[in-house]
Figure 1: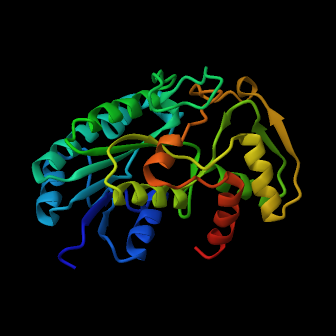
Figure 2 (figure 1 turned 120 degrees about the horizontal axis):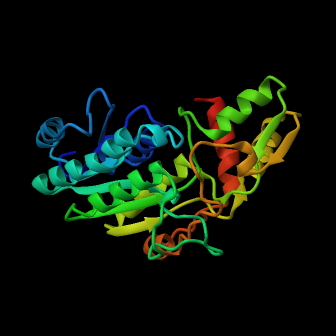
Length: 286
């Protein structure tokens, strides 16, 4: 076991960290330990150093984040502190112990004006406080001498609050739904993202990568598919972003190009409906 790479995961209790724990434990190739916010506050430099000095990891995966997109508009200082400034502390600590920082970012760093999937080299231009805080995190993650930054989109997973669970909760009560139909993106199962992260680690990848499940849809299309798989019979009406009236601006198009991930790992992301079917099966057993 002493030769097995040691991995620290932040954000235990969140949907991505839970999937990472399972993926890294599955083959016995990694010695992973996860920490909740109460156990490891990523805004606390002293605590970060204490944990890393104790465990001496080769890898630190930062799955902790402030994820309330609308809430970030009023709580932008908190979002910046967790999503941005804390990443600089993680990078410094990784440099001190020689660990590689793996940091998770978002499609919301883009403004949505593109007409083709965003590649890693496309210029970010976030349109909301959450996106700005995540872009700051990307910039700070690059301070780590060895790092992997993975942008993903429309994430859902076991054990977390997410769009699909909110939709299914309403559908289970027979409540009609009104869902935005003019935002385009790629829903991503956290189980698939966890596997993708492990694949990047396995090949000692470095730099910025995009990973989502393949193909694109709208929130309306995702809601219809989830309800169909669950077997509910409730109306799902389309609405526009303007009519829905969310606090934070959203990119109207945030599909990510994942060709670099495929070229690096040799793996193709599977279509989002296939991943959604797996999630719907697995959530029943969670």
